[in-house]
Amino acid sequence: MNLLSLHQRLYERTDGRVGHRMIGVPVLLLRTTGRRSGQARTSALVYARDGSRYVVVASNGGSDRPPGWLYNVEARPGVEIQVGRQHSAATAQVVTADDADYPRLWTLVNDGNHGRYNGYQTKTSRKIPLVVVTPAT
Image (cartoon, rainbow, N blue to C red):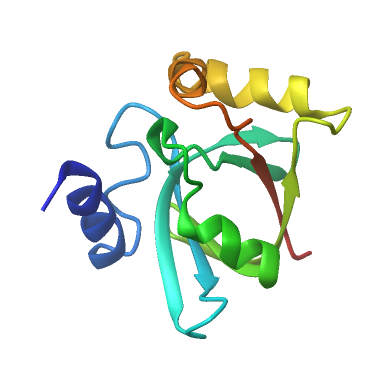
């Protein structure tokens, strides 16, 4: 089991008492529905706040392939997020590089993750999309 899987497992098993800031940056759990399987999927993701919204990055560590959860939110934008112990229904919206707000959101989340996303972007020719998650009110 790798470190990210262990982190996610601790976050889930403690219902957020452990894991929100375990790796030095804020992490949420994004729960999506598999676009083909229909099964619940959970991903632990570093996030940045943009007002009441959360911004996550579909970097997949700089891989040329986007993470599977991105396809799920594109197909079914109704998601659930868990931030610490708080669970919320939410809507996910993909933000691509051609969106006018992309540079601002990229800077926000990259700065919050100590510049790691810029490093991931150098590993791939695909422009890494962002996902803005808006909790239901």
